[in-house]
Image 1 (tube, helix red, strand yellow):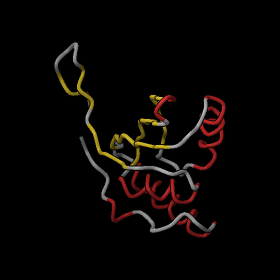
Image 2 (cartoon, rainbow, N blue to C red):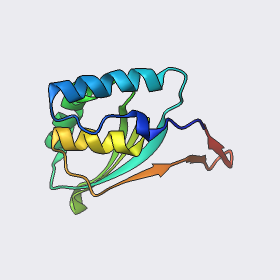
Image 3 (cartoon, helix red, strand yellow):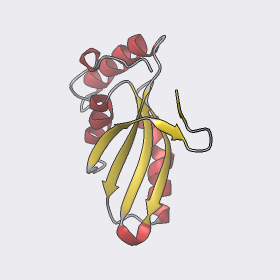
Image 4 (cartoon, helix red, strand yellow):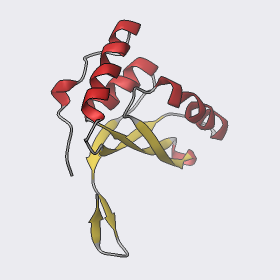
Length: 121
């Protein structure tokens, strides 16, 4: 899988100027580049309504080329395991810093299709 180089991304999304710079850089990177996949672990006491509200609001806050695909929710343990695609781990971390969404860790991952016994992508 082709990975996008992290050095092409901006350092911050905290200001509109930074967001514009990051968005521009992502447009440059995304063209012809398959996004890397990540699992993000969150520990936060969200209920179903709060995680749904976060999911509804997040797309408008994401730079081009970044997507939150799904979440596994363990409400009893206040843990969430979310699948993301982005050019790099740094870009995802910048999204969480700018949106003030807490996270424990971001892991680059590959998807194993257990039925076909092969990696996808």
